[in-house]
Length: 473
Figure (cartoon, rainbow, N blue to C red):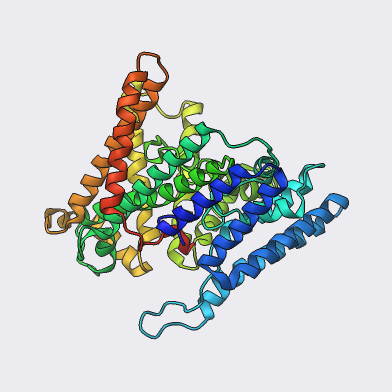
């Protein structure tokens, strides 16, 4: 049972309906916890005991930290215990475990959502250690770690934000239910219509997946650019779609989750990109990895090294391939280059270009988009050899003379980009019209038509079989 299946929608309707009937906070907490474990059991029953055990351990460790705040060794012990399954499953056993003779893929199934609920567990222990008076009951901690909208792939929540919401005794209002349904529809549209169509194409032998997996070489520079941009779009639509469904599902039961994306491809520099992309996890890395590392030293060089190390860790978190580490290191270098450029601007070393601000913004946004797109080659390529071949094609000017229009992902990238732009413009028009009295009539006409088109596209193009990309992380 995954987010894009009819069984999940039926499950969510039942949970929402029962939540509206319950009167006490404790009843709702028990219902949501039972629903969360039922949801996890339907997807991966063998690892449900691991999730329950991790939740109980972190509650107990947090309770001890609340009583013994002068023992940081207890915090480090809790962090180590949380990291042990993550390292064991994702790196040690996945690297040295048994492999399929044909594909070479590991036969070991990594627990679903292990990375995400491990991060939430660690942040809970740190927050309890830092904030006197903050803690949760065993029921609240188990719900915080195993909450069904977030347990698979986030967004990564914080205990001080989510646990108080689990204690809220107000019933879910009509506005929140309406917002939740709309977020779910938008999420299904991004995932099943845009991401899946871009990845697989309209038929076999098309799409971005074909370009990376089946061509096997012989790319032109234009091929590589389209594949890099196309995969960036595919990953964004897939994960933003998941995040919208998760946020919408939580709204239906009265919980507000953190946002995960804010139009990241409109960022004008690498730092802004990471404030817009996978925001819940990037802020987690910033707060719990980069800042603690940076505080260990006072020199600017150490802070730069901490930034590089943090982004490399971020890359390695996605898997045990060298290409993920290179992707993280690449983004660390982009962030350092941007910081150095800002310092040069502040010291007056760089000349001030007398150009309208909108021109400067457009140039910076385009340059950032191209730099981010190049990074997706590291992230998506099947191995280091493919990375080298694709960058060779990018750097060889002669390959740009080849334009193979038989590659349908050219058209798919352009078409999906156009459809998404139309979606953004329509949603912004509705939002702007809603803020004025004169626009209310337009909203009453445009919004139903807008969501009717989205629903129709989901029904026509929806594919329940395609899993979310981030499930593999």
